[in-house]
Every structure is written in structure tokens, then in C-alpha cells.
Image (cartoon, rainbow, N blue to C red):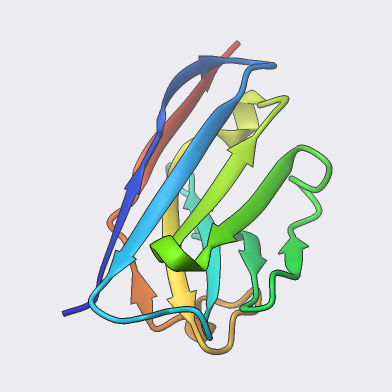
Length: 121
């Protein structure tokens, strides 16, 4: 059974950094795209970043230059390094894995349960 488990969320002051991790189990995902989405209270889930099997990243405009996505295929793990955090980055962050791997939720087959990131002013 496929399972995605996120970790690394927490409370941080604006301008600070956090590193999220997502470990996938149940199958090998080296040929899949691995991505991050987030959902703030009262808002729809939105794309943050994705990284394809060969390592090419793609970012939402709102995080480009501040966030870095990376992956370790040997560990079936994807990371999201978040720097220069802003209060508007506060959300539940979800890991997702899919063959499509674009910016649409429908392009991802597997999802984690999420980890809370709170950025205080």
C-alpha cells in the first residue's frame, strides 16, 4: 500500500526557514514526479513546486527564489527547503506523487496527510 508521510512543519517567524520532508513507501517512485501543494484556511489547495524524475524542478511564482525542491530517489523522499518565509506561506503543506507531475491536483495519484507550517509576524 502506498503511503506518503510528511514531516518538518512547525512554527517559525517571518524571514525564517523550514525544511519539509516526504517519504514515500509501498512502491518505487523514481519515474514519478514528486510535488508539494499547500492549503491555507478558507482557500483552495494550490501548487507550490514539483520535481520530475530526472530532477528538473518547477515552482509557483509565489515561492520561486525562496523555496527549493529536491529529491533522493534512493530514499523515495522529496524535500522542500523554505527560506525567507512570509506570513502568507502559512498553510498545511501536502506531498504528492504522480506520473503527470504538473501544477494541477489531478496530475497526482498519491497524497500525504499534510504538515502544518505557521509563519508568525
